Length: 449
Ligand SMILES: *Cc1c(COP(=O)(O)O)cnc(C)c1O
Image (cartoon, helix red, strand yellow):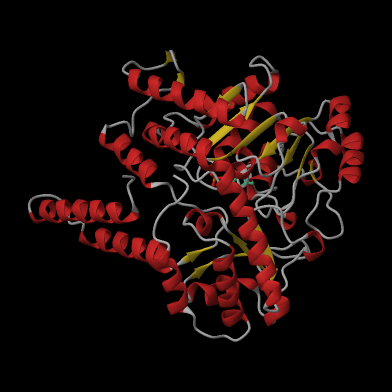
């Protein structure tokens, strides 16, 4: 029988009992920490509807594997270098696990080259930028206002990498143009800028990511200008490998990076893959960027859970990814039905796991405040700049995503209920905490595993 959330609750109670017994003897007191963890579990698992699109939950089996990884003492160990070529001895278990993880990832991602050592999506980006780029290079990426991740911005690792002696060269970080609706890459305009500036690297992919990037529009010009195409798929990785979103490698992206804990629903970490030969200068630079550039120990205790996640995804990924997108579309349609029309209606609202709602137009209030109204009602969805906003402190958007509610087993009918709760909180200023708690309690388990 598969492990359930109930089994994990029992384990958590047992672990706490062991801590209580231990803390009455010698040693430090841990009761305050236990209390916080217990209420975290209550809030996030038992009481809340989580629509934060970057978040998800591991399967019980993957969770148990994370614990086993720690109980087996893999945490805090070092296996710098590659399998079979490590800098330290005693890495037999890590070598065996990493070999399996790489093989599973290559198979799932359809890639010849995979590196699972980056410890987060942000680390992946740093590893790509660190050695391949130099101060003064021209690069292109999405701005924060148009959905780009902060690591692609002037204050992030991309912007900082192309500064010279700390002097920001903002004109070297060229924004990817978007079409008038704000949510689509303008392929023609982007190709023109590539021709003009001949950037060394273009970073595709976003954090507010409703529609695919137009990779096909730039592959030819990039070949002429020598611009390399990196696709930051942190948010949509699970949708890509589930075959339900654009296929960046097939469409012309050269390297794809991402997080393993967002739509992929695995342990926290990063992954990067490509079909370029290992001696391609970009891959050589990234390999050095990963180690020694941005990791030393690569958090070995997460690898067993990563293997489990990749295997689960191979079985259930397509079904999960497609339900996740259908739920996002159903949520958007239901919001519209209840008078809260999300952005990009003329394009069917979304083709990803996300929906963007302008709450400022509906309430006259900035979205940061609306985020707290929702939070008080047991609905977690984050305030976000929308393409027409001009300050990150005065934003209009609530960004919501369906990865976690879908992995709990919710479907279109539940999306309708959630949309109605939004309407009650945002328009009627009513309290729906009992309704959101009831819904969460009806879906305590992790499905698709
Ligand atoms: C979340 C995100 C990242 C950062 O990933 P972490 O795993 O949180 O470090 C990078 N790029 C994009 C586009 C993201 O959405």
